[in-house]
Length: 220
Image 1 (cartoon, rainbow, N blue to C red):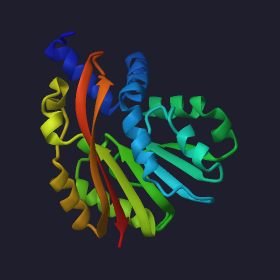
Image 2: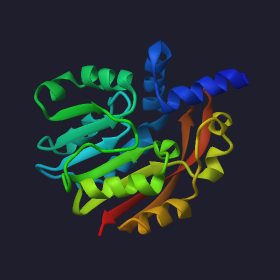
Image 3: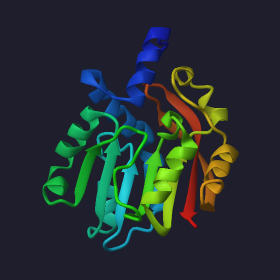
Image 4: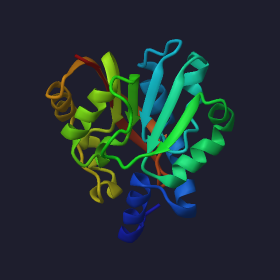
């Protein structure tokens, strides 16, 4: 399946900020393409009773049941720049949102409107490419994490991403070393770094082999 440059640009725009009817489909496509990656990120979280967990960029939030299956006593917060995804996530997780166990909120992608040292864990999958200023954003993440709190970032390294046609539209790409350096320069210590190669159904409907990286860091 070959997409035109205009179609690739539209897809890239939807991946960074899903909107409209195409945005809903993009949300579900991301669920399929990123399921294994999300599961691996969640596996790195120390999910405990009364944990307060923030996800940056949850999309439609269809995956958060994985967290509650580990421990139902957590509080989950999802911050997304897409109003459509916040609406979809709230609907798809209606029982959790109605009980207050899950809260989805609109965010601008530049600041985090939470109290200092509020969260025990923060995680994010495939949002790093859209951070306008990673170092500044990491400082804001650090502020809302408790001491020794954990940050888990899942992303596809530049060496893999640059082979994906739509990544030239609005994606800022990083190698593992870049992300490690950002973290260490902003009051985090690296706990674990690992990569995995997987076969996925891509966002353009093709089966692809890709490598992703997960970095787990702790607030100093």
